[in-house]
Image (cartoon, rainbow, N blue to C red; front, side, top):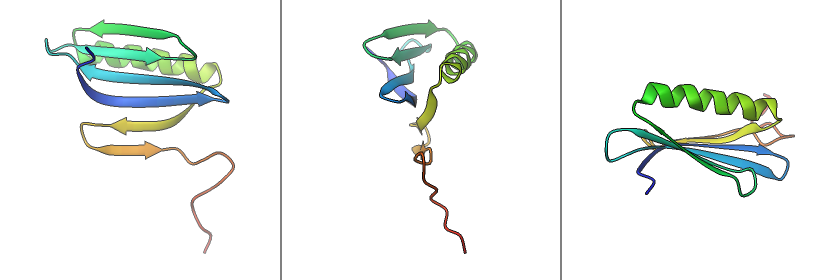
Length: 95
């Protein structure tokens, strides 16, 4: 069981992707699920959110060092979804 999904990150590098999901557990802990690249899957359990955030940061640093870029961030606690600007385009218009 995943738990209550709080935050989702999607990192991409060419055709490869990695989805990282942070979810609260019924016991009051935090679970971090990492899917990708390919069929790789990891599940990490933490007793507190600070330890989970530290591990999230380590995973993100490794992904960026390996050439991945953050494509999408969703915070389900606030309902906000943030997508990066598509590569090669700029949504802003010059006046």
